[in-house]
Image (cartoon, rainbow, N blue to C red; front, side, top):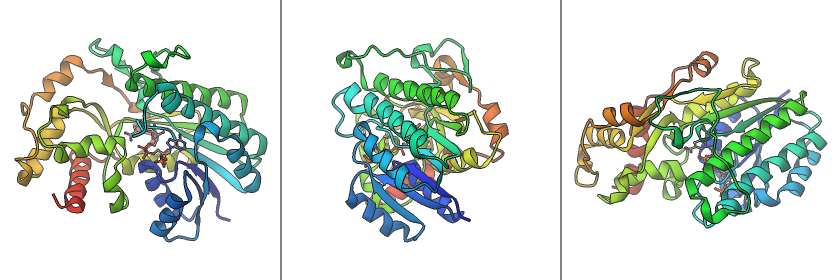
Length: 341
Ligand code: NDP
């Protein structure tokens, strides 16, 4: 009989691809969304009777919602927790808008699973490489891997001193710790964690190109924002959204992923790497995309960047990751076509 999966943050960039794969593999999928409008639109896009949605308007106040979902759907066997604020457009306050929704939402979900999720066997939490990597440690010739933890500290009630990046790092690091704490106390639910680097790749549905998620918007703004000064923000690791989705399914379908962090990173890049790829692949955009100093990314990466080692993850996930060139090409190609650039 088909297994039922609960996925939080269903309309998100990553979750949308996870749901596509789940439906292709005949799972029954219940997704949490924030509004009925978003849910109805999503149902229309997927056109698949195996998908239904429930509304969880805000993670911070989600206790009753999650309890009700788990109570009314005892058939849920797998929980994929992807919902979390990622530099939302309404962002004002690090604790209120990033940290507390992430941590409290996750606690609410986990407690509801313990109380009512009698058939839940597997739980996958979408963390981040922000819970592994610390920008403060850059330039120290470090190697960071599946065992590394961001050492960011959170002094509660001190939002005004927390910038957005630190707030996000705190949200992912402290939330992931909650998940492992839960795992140690609940051996019946097997836990795996996904730690993706920056996720790029095309949107599954063209319409979301008009309302890009944070990481896609960073990349998209290279071609939509012209020659602004803002283009030197980016430096980090890359993984394609299609690989992130595959990893979520592997994470609950296999036993060698139990109690593991899957550190998803294909390669590292700077903004210059992205500019070089876009300029080489899209000559028609030459008057819109800055040139920077072509090729200078190699030195920047050598001098300042921590080495990421995800050998263990690659052994577990025995598939080839999509290259940065392909991920960037597919992302920009879709944006150009949909926006008529
Ligand atoms: P999206 O912003 O596209 O998706 C996030 C989802 O969470 C959306 O469905 C969003 O709903 C929901 N959500 C956010 N805040 C709340 C809240 N307060 N209450 C209820 N629901 C909420 O981001 P991604 O798909 O990129 O990210 C998914 C997960 O992957 C996140 O946990 C993120 O931290 C992690 N991740 C992402 C990376 C990336 O580069 N994209 C890299 C590493 C980790 P709505 O859109 O309706 O607000």
